[in-house]
Length: 184
Image (cartoon, rainbow, N blue to C red; front, side, top):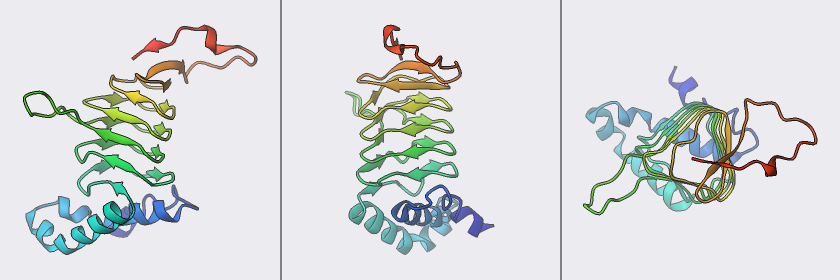
């Protein structure tokens, strides 16, 4: 049971040794989330995880983050994920991606992003604040997401806007740039 849990991202990261290693180490840290007893027992491992994954590999993926199965780390460099973020199943994150919250003027923080299932993020994507990204969403490289994105969409830009729905058929030869993008 525990073995199948810690290897749940193995096939998704086929050919990606760094992705396999990071996700294996991340899943091994799971018992520390269960209760204080396991957190104390797992403390040496959590220190090892933090030093190796965050400091040496440049990936901030706190062990308490909720991440669904089949998480793929493409080019795992400069990835920053707030520990309160929630990531669905079958997601693909590329390098230099940030999921974070916003510090308010009074010193409090907003909630963190919630990412649906089957979401693919291009490189340098920033998703900031209490934002929900729906299922089956593609977000283009360099996009800054500060508002919710519905299911089955492609979004790009700064600020990100929906440019196409994935649940509508694409007509060959049709030029999509004539349509006004939808602000999200």
